[in-house]
View 1 (cartoon, rainbow, N blue to C red):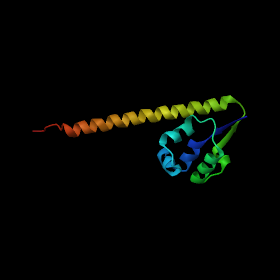
View 2: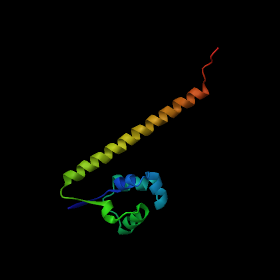
View 3: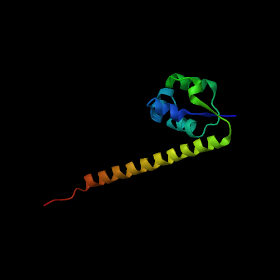
View 4: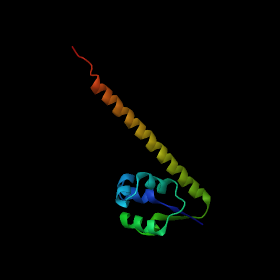
Length: 110
């Protein structure tokens, strides 16, 4: 039996961003991202703190898997979400840069 931390799912249901959770937990954004995407184990004290901040029960954060195939599917989805998030951040950065360039070099209309 495998148990997986379902932090991203619970966090989004509560309407929190990773940044919000990191701030409320007193952790770095990278720490939250590690928990969501890579953590294989979690100390009980951390699980308790997550439950307090997210106002949930430990059973809400933990999901039991019978075999590795379900976990692999979940991990693939999480990786895809992370990749989409990265692409969106890059797209927004490009749009901001284009907007800044336009404001620095306005076209002269005569």
